[in-house]
Length: 61
Image 1: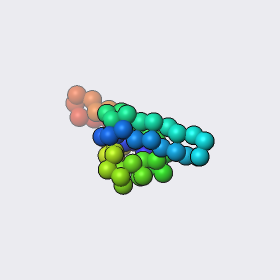
Image 2 (image 1 turned 45 degrees about the vertical axis):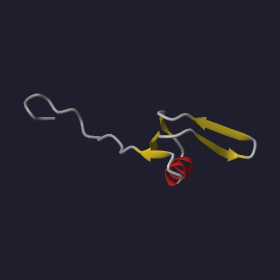
Image 3 (image 1 turned 180 degrees about the vertical axis):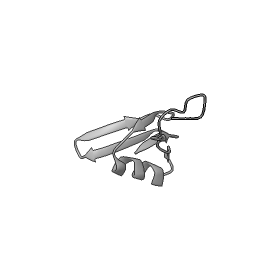
């Protein structure tokens, strides 16, 4: 899941570990982290890029 953090966010995957994300960072994170940050209003999900190939100037692939 790719998100853009709108506020600083600390993710704790375990009691002994904290991952700090700063506002403005765009990161690919684990789904649990991304969903929690979005729920708390500290991040917004970024839509995945299209998987289609590049289009040539004549419109063909």
